[in-house]
Image (tube, rainbow, N blue to C red):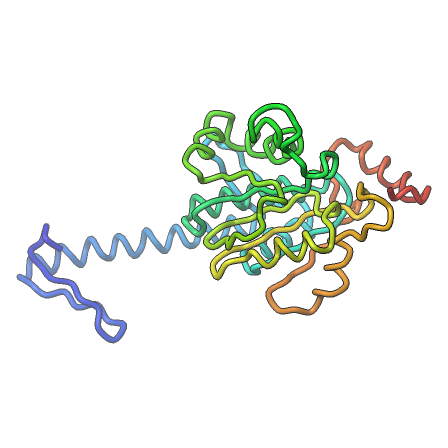
Length: 272
């Protein structure tokens, strides 16, 4: 440490400080303060995690897990390379994934967030739609955009996109890429085909994480086309590193009527 005219080395998990008596004393005082400060931060972080806090924005917005499933979901995104979340609308699947992604970016865990979603309505043939690339995909990624702007504001969201910290990629454009050091969110995954689901899961790089969200009761695929989300729930269970989270009506956080509407449709058997 140049300020005190001492040298600091780590040997066999021990810290060696060499220099004049006064310099060593000053350096040790600074190091002890730093260690104590770090301990306080770790304790605070642990307390926040226990409190269910997922993300705290610069605007002072605090996002917490409001149910057991949401807490398991947030924990899974931290621990597993692949998290697959299934459940009804309004349970926070997309919003919490975005909150976790922003938290990871701030921590330096990932270099970017990649947003993707199947464009079922356009058959993913975006070349036939008017406007530039982003104008074409924007309507299909609106729920993800809404989550980001709610958490960080429009200006910060646009800045993150300009700096390539947030990348928007329709599912059809993911083929051939290896997504390393990236936090990938695949939204509306119930509308992926078997081939599309396999394709995005196999894009995962060594230090990447993929979060797959979907509601199996809102499949918009054509008849006789199997949902990739339903398929992975059958064939990938039990594989280490792939975790499944199930949301239920108890986890709905939208207007109280949403829970009643989802339940009514479920009881009526209208799952498509």
